[in-house]
Length: 384
Image 1 (cartoon, rainbow, N blue to C red):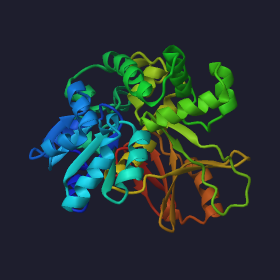
Image 2: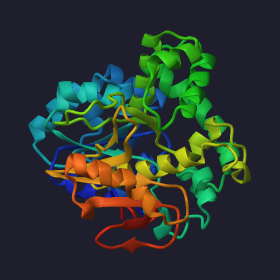
Image 3: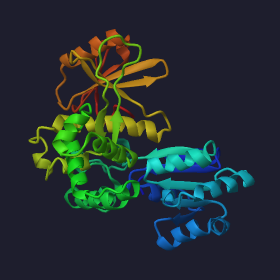
Image 4: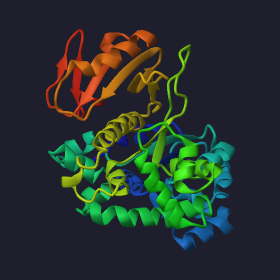
């Protein structure tokens, strides 16, 4: 098993909380890491119909059988179990009694806020990071291969090609996950919408434009985006507009978590045609910002990032707020170092009063340069 960065955090929180909850997109490795890391815990999958019926209709007997040190996978399938778990852990008052896992953030958070607030640590897993693959010598040498393959564990565990994996993954996601969150009657239209959203990846959301292009109403567009966020296929990167008088773009940007899935949705059939698509820069940007989020999530830190764009089109790709300090990043898919990439960074640093030491250009080249004026860093090393 590939060692995951989040493992130490899981073990730490089991000593501090009676319940530990691990969420994340389907097939990102949640079940694997829990079963391999915690062999002394009993693994119980609530995807199994008989087990689910047992938990749903006889919750007290279910928790009597699975009394302690148990992993309940896909826990959102049995929402009434949360209250019984609350009673159980409150009575027993031991740390690390139960581990809950699931793929639907909305359903999990709704039940946790009602029953397990203050009793569970919350962690989020995502597909592999660059650092995780690199440490196991599984990271492809070529950037195009990395982007096209993406980071889902089955691509590396099963040696399955992205062309074979992602079509069935997308169909399974729609049939299993989406229908649990909302009864979408037109699965074909929803799948079309996901592909449309891929075209707009890395751009501020324009609900009216998406509505016109997809042929569904604005409320439906908002609902479908919410579903995709809740099930960890996409995330929003908000605009930064704290204490600034300038006119700024307020709409968040949408990004997909994984570049392999993004390439599939964009109709890129092989790695050789990746750069001919016209979206290469956005795909590279997607990978870098996703690596930023993974680094934060896997280390238990606040994963919020921002972008900056004003109405004069002055833009910086990524802002990271750490306490009272701001860090700004420009992302370039080129392999060539050029000082002009710092033009916007310098302008935004004056507006937001960001020290020059906190500015970085993340690019595809191999050379790293850092001095009092410029900091160019390879994408593999930006967030390690």
